[in-house]
Length: 302
Image 1 (cartoon, rainbow, N blue to C red):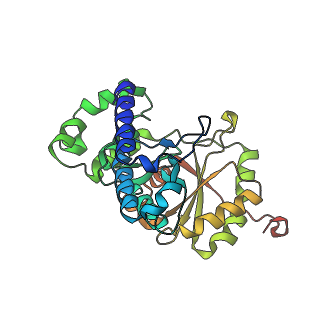
Image 2 (cartoon, rainbow, N blue to C red; image 1 turned 120 degrees about the horizontal axis):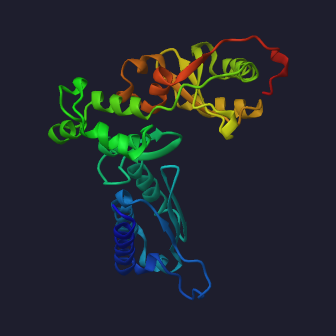
Image 3 (cartoon, rainbow, N blue to C red; image 1 turned 30 degrees about the horizontal axis):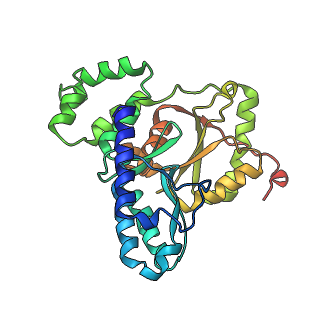
């Protein structure tokens, strides 16, 4: 969708919402210089917001509508962020439901999707649009992606990816091929950087315990100012609840420049089906091992 079409669609969506639910977008006595409602979500989530507006109209008592107003309806890090003024009890559960729907709705087309990373950026994507995002990272740019898209591939039964996707729903094989194409170069570590990264071992040992099997690093290029991705390989499945505590420990010990990803060893057998396909393929194709070291545990910040 080109920018002009996207802008027209956005304006049509917002105008229709304000016409259908005017009381949700204004406050009686509002001054001209009062900040307007901030609405900034991708097109695939328009339906999520439309349902939210309908749900709020159904539960908000007429006597309370005068004091209600949306303040912010935005996408932040592939999650729906909502702020409003007015009665909270009937509205808050509807907001929670809207956030949950957005988390599984492709932000491009509105079809079922999942929140997935591509090159450090998250979006909620259906399989087709996830593949499109991966192709944007092709090392040879748009021309290289177009060439691959139209070239018959042996792993796809001699069909091109374009023909394969047109004939059948996208399969794990196609997703994994696109993931491999999008991978960054394998990093090279000099001695000082290797030594520094080895110091992350005891930090994550404390955070993740005996499940931690190995550490790998990908997309690491200190000259660019980017810290890279630290991949903790875990026995069994990755536990998302453990990540926040591990990230906090890393930051306290001087590793705030690194993105931490947890990958279960069981996920490596089928990266396309994993909860984090990008991190799984980084571990397999575009990372190097960080050998365990034994620094002084007393210097760790807990």
